[in-house]
Amino acid sequence: MSIENAKTRLFVADALSNGTEIQLTPDHAHFLGNVLRFKVGDRVAVFNEKYGEWTGPLTALKKRNALLTLDQQTRDGVAEPGPWLVFAPLKKTRTQMIIEKATELGVRKLFPVITENTIGGRVNRDRMAANALEAAEQCERLSVPDVHGPQSLNDLLANWPKDRCLLVGDETGTGTSIADIISSKGKKIEDYGILIGPEGGFKTAELEYLKAQEFTVLMDLGTRVLRAETAAIVALACLMALT
Image: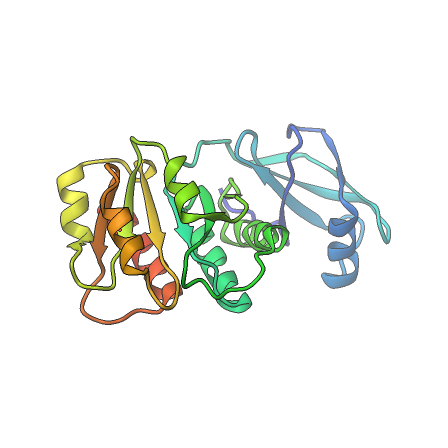
């Protein structure tokens, strides 16, 4: 159902039902009052995966306080399964692009991984989580991806679920096309993970270690050399289209 009568949508973790009064956060109040210039009576949509999406009018709006009373459900709660994305952090704006587009493309979990050639600097998990939340609010999904803290490649692989196929972006040209991989595996989209390496690519030893894992498959994305953020978007789009 359309949410034409709501001017914006916000994620809240509360239980949502008809007549429920939602106490929005101070950040939400600031956004609604000072950024969007909302007034009492303006309608807002709130959502989460368990309870779906609801709308209602603002019943109070002050500088750091906002109340919303729900009176209409516009979408039922529904599970939103999706793949996991592992990526080597890049510079700030390029990492933000990965987070935003991965959220739009249905990723459920995001894992920053530190490789030998990673040059993205300090990883700000809170900023990445905020980017994912904002993207979820804008793209009309009900769930928000989980953003994990940075970890080494070795630690990531040691804790990776053995039944989740990890597609590894291989810039050396020795990988298998993503279409052929998906065709042969026959898995659901939520049974995959994608690993995109750093700007300088994986070191030879890292690539050999990845190849040795029972759950990894080296993935080829074509003849062109793609930037890391482009490779992440292309791989996720192909996965969505082919599963």
